[in-house]
Length: 457
Ligand SMILES: Cc1cc2nc3c(=O)[nH]c(=O)nc-3n(C[C@H](O)[C@H](O)[C@H](O)COP(=O)(O)OP(=O)(O)OC[C@H]3O[C@@H](n4cnc5c(N)ncnc54)[C@H](O)[C@@H]3O)c2cc1C
Image (cartoon, rainbow, N blue to C red; front, side, top):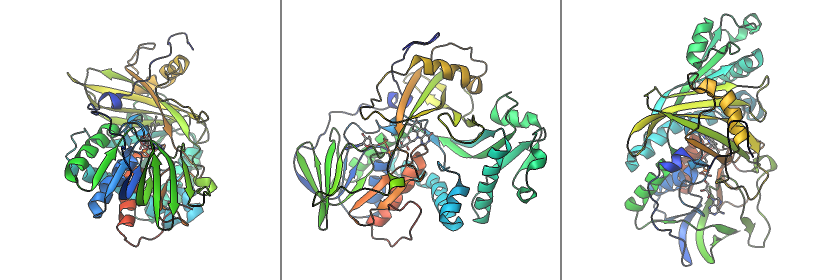
């Protein structure tokens, strides 16, 4: 595949490029017994192991078919953000305002859980925090977000700031009930917040954001767990789980010709199912239809600049209605450490496509025509001073485990309590995975917890 300016490029993620050597592979080499098996060593699995070891005295075994942090956790935009893949106001309509607000509050609090995990493990990965901005251009976008702000306000959650241009064509059409949820500012201010001269953008939503290399974080937390809990924690990579058999008295997890007999299993596989989960009688165990993973492949590219620039996260809605294959494009800018120097790395993303190919390969080259389209469409937001057609330092893609319900799945299967999940709706998944790991640990510790919108059905 070729385009005018760009050829297909080798897949290369800036996060995997920063990982330390993994050492020799450690596949499962014998049958074994434990209390909890966690399947998948991305942020969901590592956070689940971290909080479970901390909250219980149970033995935990973490198994991974590849190496740590090589799934979506090593191939994302690395942005710390807490919004849902579905507007909060829709979730409130579906589940009630209180349940929606509790869920949003749980994601917001995951910032603190992430800080706890980072500090306690002594992880040296760079964590940057700042206010991020999202650009909107029509009344529909704005009203969706004002309705969400009202849900947040009614629940006493941290408000998101909203600025609307005094030149917005729809300014007079904003219903009076939303007065107090936004401020009117000169168009120039909208441009400053979004760092663009694109005057189509008439409103900006601002919230707490951040940037971290989640791949490096999980690699460092894993190292800590191995040092801190040598008696209770085991990690095996190159160990692909083929079959999980759930019975009333225990679970058997089969991988590489060996069996792990365990009390519970927690699936942190990002939802992509290349393994069988079944009852003792061979009946498949599934989630509710809207909780099953459909999946998307998302593409990103990045360029380094020697000049140090302030970290930032901006997204720009692209469609008249929210949704579609390129619902929005996003730019994150962060400080990036290379072996010999420290630079500014600007990441550009947006295009996402439904996941159809079971043989999806994250190392497959990045298509040149897509790079050309991103260079044309996203680069002017990312760095207007950068001329078109220049080479990029990184190009990569990864799997997002979506589900139709737009809500992550965290908890025990309702009919098979030994089977737990921390996966699903993973376009924004870094903090939600961390929240999920903490909740799973509390469940495994035997805490009686109220139900949530994340409960498996
Ligand atoms: C391009 C892109 C950009 C993104 N940007 C952001 C962002 O800016 N902010 C954000 O919050 N989120 C973002 N995400 C989503 C975020 O990366 C994910 O939600 C998060 O990393 C998911 O973590 P995980 O541990 O569930 O999945 P993964 O990191 O994919 O880990 C799952 C692991 O399970 C293993 N596994 C699967 N099946 C088996 C098996 N049978 N046996 C053993 N192991 C198995 C896999 O090998 C993998 O390592 C982005 C995702 C992509 C793809």
